[in-house]
Image 1 (cartoon, rainbow, N blue to C red):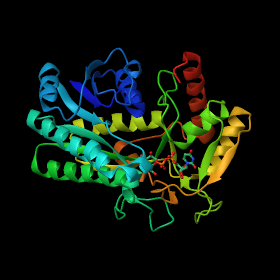
Image 2 (cartoon, helix red, strand yellow):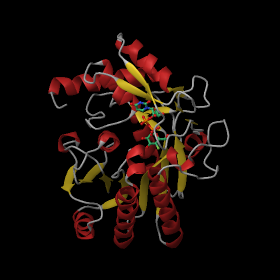
Image 3 (tube, rainbow, N blue to C red):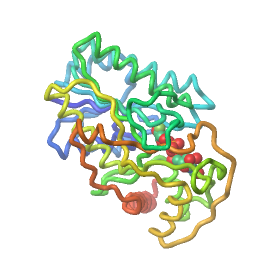
Image 4 (cartoon, rainbow, N blue to C red):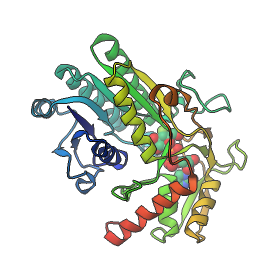
Length: 330
Ligand code: UFG
């Protein structure tokens, strides 16, 4: 049996491909390489360059490989970009996911893991870590585009012989502990990536977006999770579905939050250097605080995070950034 990874040339997808290979799985990747990289895809994986909404290509992939599960990462991921270009996000994330799900149903693929997001919750009304039964109220087109896909998966699972796991990622950061992949996009806007690039002098300075949030230090609080722990949660979701477990939507975070300022302090400490930051306006679409309650993933998947350590996450992100500098790839 083979696992099809969409977006396997991207940040999280490329880690997933390595995690599957490490687990002895046969892996097939589809990526149109709009933001992903061919070099980031493990050579052991079979690669198809193309679009997940190309139903002829999907038919070919399913006829040439014995796929029993799809892990779907392909999509657009930048919250403020989604605010500026909502229709682009609904097209790329929702419409194309619909086409992919239709191809999966047509080919009788029984299992599907979807990269969903904490953004489906918007700003939670409670201060505690969020559980999956809270109201789903995304505040950005990005979050809405992902929630719509969750809804399509739910309804598809009700109608067909099809089970899915939607993993709601909190803030993913860090790099493969074996150094085979990392966040490689020069356009990445994520806090730890931007802070590491600034610490290493690849950027002159960076912004702190908003200092007047109702949080302890006025900056946004997030639950930063190591990309390798996240990849392991997908492996466990796959195992559970193959063993007959039903559909599930579960949070992937550690259950504790750090503010933007705390993250910047940690980057400075780990790198042993200071760097300039500019205090700027709030960024559109940002909730003040969101932290996961990961109880469901732990109970249902048997997920046991191994890398719950902010400085360790930052250290691996810095290592990858240095690797990119040596490669001169950005
Ligand atoms: N931030 C800065 N400066 C930067 C970059 C980010 O201050 O240069 C701040 C943001 O304003 C936000 C926090 O750092 O308050 C985290 O921002 P990221 O861009 O790193 O991540 P987001 O929280 O916007 O989004 C991420 C994922 C989404 C996911 C979401 C859940 O990209 O997929 O977390 O909260 F849905």
